[in-house]
Image 1 (cartoon, helix red, strand yellow):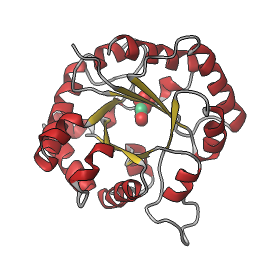
Image 2 (image 1 turned 90 degrees about the vertical axis):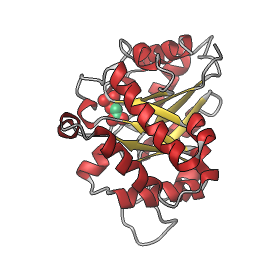
Image 3 (image 1 turned 60 degrees about the vertical axis):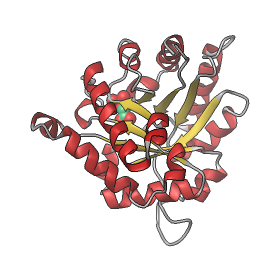
Amino acid sequence: MTPRHRLIVGNWKMHKTIPEARDFVARLAELLTPAPPDSMVEIVLAPPFTALAAVSTAIKSLPIGLSAQDMHWEDLGAFTGAVSPLMLKDLGCRYVIIGHSERRRDFGETDATVNKKVAAALRHGLRPILCIGETWDQRTNSQTEQVLSAQLTAALTGIEKDQAGDVVIAYEPVWAIGSDHPATAQQAHDAHRHIRARVTALWGQDAGERLVILYGGSVKPDNIGELLASREVNGALIGGACLDPLQFAKMLSIASSTT
Ligand code: PGA
């Protein structure tokens, strides 16, 4: 069996001041010493905007990448409160989470704005972590695949096949986020298969096979191994359980031991 690349992203949401962020990185660095997870596990932290600069400095000599949790699609302009892709690049971000369901639910994010943000991220060499997922009502009405297809199609409209390698998809069923009710390994596997099939239809076999699809929604040390067991699941987007360095390191170690 060939080893598999895994991407594990810690989404801090609206947590941690600058000193707390620095403490987290220092503690995580200790926990990853002497043996960080093998190079097949890529570690990314997504702190709030206010802590990006501090985390960027703190991770400089560590095998850890940086992501933002959102951005505007314009490079600059009169957009009070917004942060542009250029600013994220400045801070050393390689990734940016786009279309998280909390932004869709609470901040008026639409498929159209998600599409603009995905295009802007790619234009600036940032890898978008595009979040899609169904609500519980949609799942119980057998609309999961239809919803995932519609969100994917809308978000990727106009994106060229040669940019496919930079796109990461996060399957995050809305009902599983922060709920203590993760999707079962089978539900995640099925949804990821569907997403991969849609991307294959859009961009071809090669892009479909290479596509990195993360699972997100109540990932914890006690379920990450099972979720990552499917070859369709290439990593995890972790919220609540990533805030504690010990738990996060535990999940990295499990991801590493099951590649
Ligand atoms: P959770 O959040 O792990 O707390 O469910 C995941 C996410 O929303 O990215």
